[in-house]
Length: 152
Image (cartoon, rainbow, N blue to C red):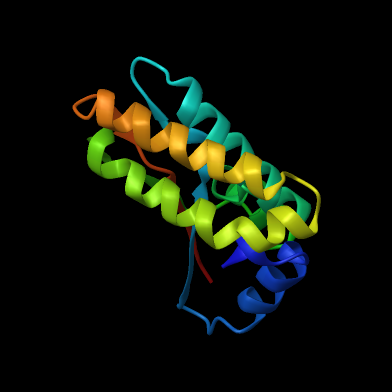
């Protein structure tokens, strides 16, 4: 949720104000910087750059999950009572579908904000497909889902 919102601190403050005494505020969000494959892939790195740059151009915070404790503090919630990190690893051959889907969905924004041309986006998707086809069994990590919670 916070990933997409420009006023993250204000939203967290408002959510915290809505928590009843004894209730909990639980927030989970992504850290996209953790997407990768081993050994590293120039094709996946370029796809990741395009994704990060496009999300950044439209005001998203691609690392917001990792900053949840700081956001809690800035919103007046205080230090979280706890945090949790969940990740996913799958073969590059199937995991690249998620990356390709995100790239396709971001195409209008990438073009509209001058992040890339249609040709550059198509070339990145083709390179990703070819690389994942050549190395389908390499381990690929997805974005981390990071959570933080606080009891009122």
